[in-house]
Amino acid sequence: MGFGEGTMENLVTLSDHFRGKKVLVTGHTGFKGSWLCKILDILGSDVYGYSLKPPTDPNLYEIINADSFVRSKYADVRDIRSMENFFSEVRPDIVIHMAAQPLVRDSYKDPRYTYETNVMGTVNVLECVRSNDCVKSFLNVTTDKVYENREWDYGYREIDPLNGHDPYSNSKSCSDIITSSYRKSFFADGRCAISTARAGNVIGGGDFAFERIIPDCVRAAYSGTPIRLRNPSSIRPYQHVLEPLFGYLGIVKCQSENIKKAGSYNIGPEYSDCITTGELATMFCDIWGRGLKWEGTKENGPHEATFLKLDNSLLKSRIGFSPKWNIEKAVKKTVEWTEVWVNDGDVAGCMESQIEEYAGE
Image 1 (tube, rainbow, N blue to C red):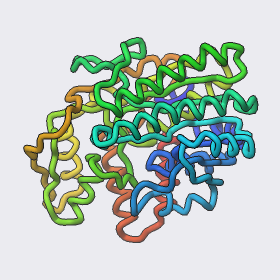
Image 2 (image 1 turned 45 degrees about the vertical axis):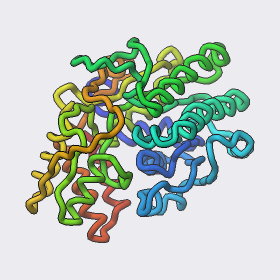
Image 3 (image 1 turned 120 degrees about the horizontal axis):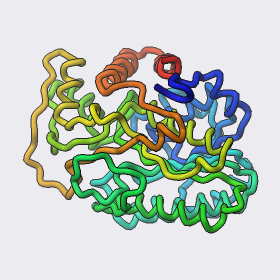
């Protein structure tokens, strides 16, 4: 299932909404941001980005030469004056806020930077939205980790308490709550639809971050060493990167057409696709082949949740969006992209093909 009456809304229909609109994406140089910019370009949007420069080397943003179709401002979300000037210059119709310090373990190393970026960065973006009446639709992308995690075996619902444990998760809880406050305090007149999206763990081609499971798998595969897992028994809502990105676009579209659909939404896989990190690594090894294996480590790191699932029923009923690709297909598509990249193939073409395949199912 996807958008609408049991079928995926195709790219042609989506482009009817996004074509010609100015869409500003913060954090556009990251893994998810690069994929989102590619989708928006296919849809015919005028794509703008506000972000620091790409965070890794190599990185997906430069691999696909995204600056050829994105007008970028390289700056920090903590810099309110720079952001105000860019908003005034661009006058976007839609804003999708993805800029963040995104890693749990890094948040323990530098909690101040994490809170400054994830909390005050959100305030700065919302202040710019508040002072620019051109913006008609705003989406803040948070995380599945915003919830007070009690290690329950059911999926967290949007009405469950927000109180992330670690500095990253907690800062995103704050970002989510701040967005709700702005919606009620400054946008009750309906001039701009405001929502938050809480997505599960994403995988896909082009993620080069450290201390993420699939990039670690890829690095191990090409170095000829076993994959090393810190928490192989941890359960996470893994999903292909296209799942949340099309979910974000669905929320933006629906709330633009009916502001009553603005709110907070989980975007996660079906429960059957919430698997352990060890199971995910085994799946990657089986699909990759060539004798690749994984092993657990005895590394004593900071606290991380061991059990996390999301209930996606609200997104299904209100937005009409359901997951498309199961976890096995998500891993296969990640390996497909990786092999194209390693062999100096047409990475952008591979992404376009995967986007079209996803949208057409």
